[in-house]
Structures are given as C-alpha cells and as structure tokens.
Amino acid sequence: MAEKEACNLGIEMPVDMNIKEPLEQCKKFTKIEFEHVPRIQNEFADALATLSSMIRHPNKNYIDPIEVEIRDQHAYCFHVDEEPYGKSWYHNIKRFLATREYPEDATNGQKRALRRLANHFFLNGEVLYRRTLDIGLMRCVDSAEATRLLEEIHAGT
Image (cartoon, rainbow, N blue to C red; front, top):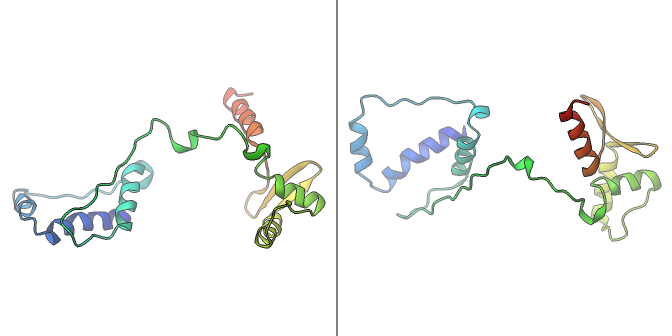
C-alpha cells in the first residue's frame, strides 16, 4: 500500500506544481510498466515509500529533500556492548518476582507497568523465563550471555 501511495504522490506532485515537461516526456514512452517487488526483497524502497506516504504534499514549489544514509551493516549489528547502569534489561522484573520490591525511584505508573510486565515472566531459581502462548517459555539472557550464546551457535559448538 505504501508503494502505491508513493507512486501516486510521485505522479500527482508534478501535476500540482504545474510542471509541464514531465507530462510531455510521458508522451514519448510507448509503454509504462509497474513491477511489484516483494517487501522482503526491496527493504530500502519500502522504507522510502513508507516515509513518503507519511509526508503530505505542501502547497509550495519547493519540497525539502529527504536525506538517507546508507550504512555498511544492518541496524541490528550495531548492538550495545554494555548494559545500562551495569544491570541487565530484566533486572527490575527479576527483582520484583523474587522479592516483590519496586525500584527505589519508581513512580506509581512505573510500579503498575512493572506489575503488568511481570505477569508475563516466570522465575525458576535464578533463571528468568518469559511466558509465550505459541512457543512456551523463553529464557531471558543479558548482553554478555547473549554474545556468548551467539558465538557458540556460530562456532557450531
């Protein structure tokens, strides 16, 4: 859907801006063809199409360009090497399940959110698991253990 909206926007903008030359250029083509490329094969174009569908065409002659930075690695490769505050992402959940204590500086809203979030987790000794409906229990790991596990998996051990 986003691709269609981006295409429509690309066609409507020159017309709205009274640009005559692109319309004249279209007459020179004998055939115009649109080809559907599945999202999985066209991530970059899909991202641009999604961006363009969120932007309303302004009633002015100049449209600010969208700057896109292409990186050498996917975003998931840029991971955090250290846990914030030296604690794992699930520290507060694990502590709440073990002792029913909230973090010292937690607001009432944060306490309520922690209680709701903790309902989806299960503590077995020192190991925290997340309950899911489709795949059962998932073991929660911190960044150091996740890195170790990924290294083991990629090494084939």
